[in-house]
Image (tube, rainbow, N blue to C red):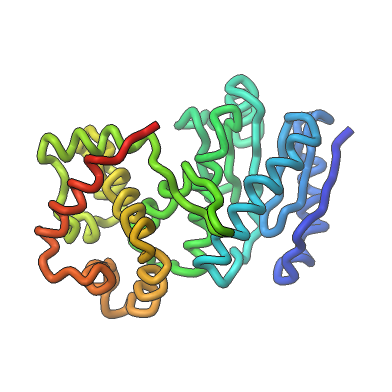
Length: 274
């Protein structure tokens, strides 16, 4: 039996939810799926119903509440589906069956065409939290450049709650970044900030360093209690500083960003994971 749970109705999109939920009931592949309304998302999963409900509140609601508390005033205007497939077999089978394509990552991805986050939840909830950041960034900071968009997303793919706030932790991206630092292969921050989407996502470094460098710059700001202030200032001054580099210098209180990068590299080199 398909289980339906309703939670956290967003009035801005509430009128569309009934129709959307009816469409989902027709779309789910089997009676094994649970559907949970966790506005502005709908969570659909083929784990036992109590686990799907737990993920909807323990991961999705926690991430949304935490991100809104610290950064985002507006919800996405569209309803976004979160498909949580219980294991690799389910993920690959149902992605092909429902979305007519093979997944390009073993963890999960966002499909703009289907307005859906599609996850192999057996790999953990980190990718899910990462992907939740992006629709909120689009709703609140549509001109956000790739380095900060992915820096923020990847910051929270390994996270925990502390004093009522979400905090990024060190994660698997650290090793590649530390190796890039040893090999002297990182971009200056000014060049990293200036990368467009094609350049950023086409990272030729072999270290995954564009993501890693962006993530651990956000991590540094977080650890210095500057990340929320940076976000607010960046949004406020995006017209004059679309890449955020001047705002970064201001918030850091650094006039020499070459010297700062050396200090930051020393900071990163001392981090550990796990």
